Length: 459
Picture 1 (tube, rainbow, N blue to C red):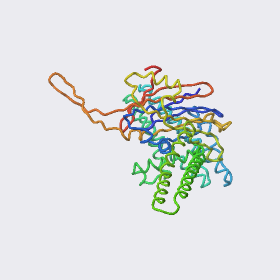
Picture 2: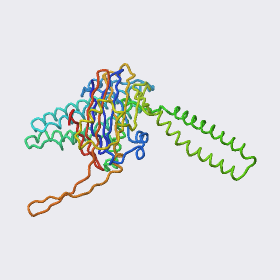
Picture 3: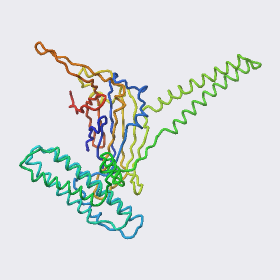
Picture 4: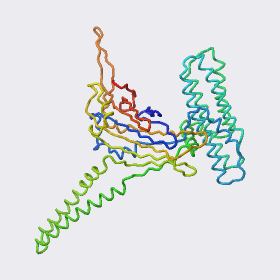
């Protein structure tokens, strides 16, 4: 059973990531316990608005073989004869698969190398990594497509990879352990970074104006990164499932109210033999009440019907051939304690007494179904990522600037403190192999997530 991972993404966002096999089915539930003092409720934070603005999902091909580009490199070496559309699409797809996996592999290896705090282990591992990456990019640069259209794809990928490699190794060197005994190894790594920088300059990939502005060069590389994701990251289309049902409810309520109003109007006309001020006033009251209660009654009936029903569907398809890969059905709604599954409620009850404060419960559910029977060669899994922006959760939080005083002998000292809030989150995943459930404590203030702590079964 593939474990679903929760991690921090940015200052005020979290990420749920997991892998799916072909034709796999999986359900993921997130139960947010939001303290009442945070001011979050259906009146202040509409669930549908939050979904559209602050929940994003992404799916892409995935492999845990960190150096899979070695397998894919043989496709890059292919030269396509002519200028047919299929040849261009095939070349771009294979190039993007290579580039995307190279980036993923490099990021993973850099992260792993940074865990080595001993200089005797760190620098040899960094040298090996530099040699591996150097060999991979040489394989890519050995075959430059002669066609101008294909060459533009190649230059974009080559430009981004070169820049990303340089940035990754500069980060590795700056964060790694410092030791004068490994000055030769350090200089080797710095020379490798200079070579990549000089290579881009020789190829005239970036103008001097762009290079002189950190924001421009960074944003350009983000654009190039999105370009190499074409064909690897799936194209997403979101459907609102209950659009027709909502129209039916609105139309039915309107029809019933109009029938009732017409009965009153006909009775009023039979009671008044001629048009009078009283008749006009009575009709005005009837139509006013109709407009007043129509929306309220429609909303009430719609909430009852919609409760527990899926609201959206994400359809992921391949960017090139439009073949559908993955279907994702989504729920998001406020619930009450009685709606909690027994296993989730039991885990919530294991909190210490002081943590059992009044809270609103927000439930997110995602049902994944992989439609593809097989993936591209070299890829045996799909990586699914769901991002939650918590910024709307902190909208009503107090700044909480205060002072903590301390007595040390005859001296009184003080220091500033910040107000922090805690969200309890339970992550549950179910598939054919069973259920996995985990509780997290998310501590945050108005500007950032301070800590995400995975809790044991009993706190």
